[in-house]
Length: 149
Image 1 (cartoon, rainbow, N blue to C red):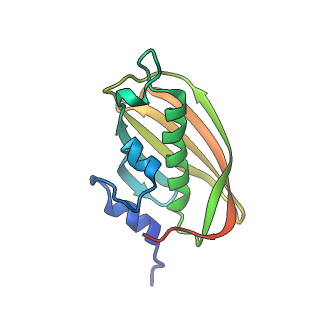
Image 2: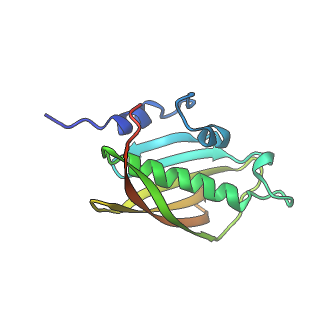
């Protein structure tokens, strides 16, 4: 019998669909769409809106961090672990730019999953693959139980 992974199945059930009220408010604000979900991998997409931009019309660095932070956390969620993990750090390299109207893609993937700590990375790109930002983080296991759609 194959073990179940309710979080992964929840993510997969929303591929190509609008996320619902069970989704954290920041995810709804960012209007993230799930493109792919596999064990250790999540690919999200969103369209940059003017309210996500800085005064010169480019995707704000804090918004870039938020998009990547969600992808990083969701990639940990795809592991199907019982405990909830929280990030202990976030390192970001801003390498490109995006403007209002651009579609951007966040690919979060697990690099190493230990018993207490999970190391993850994310790349934020344009749909053509042009790099906008890269991030890495470590997530630490808590006593809380993970979300179960």
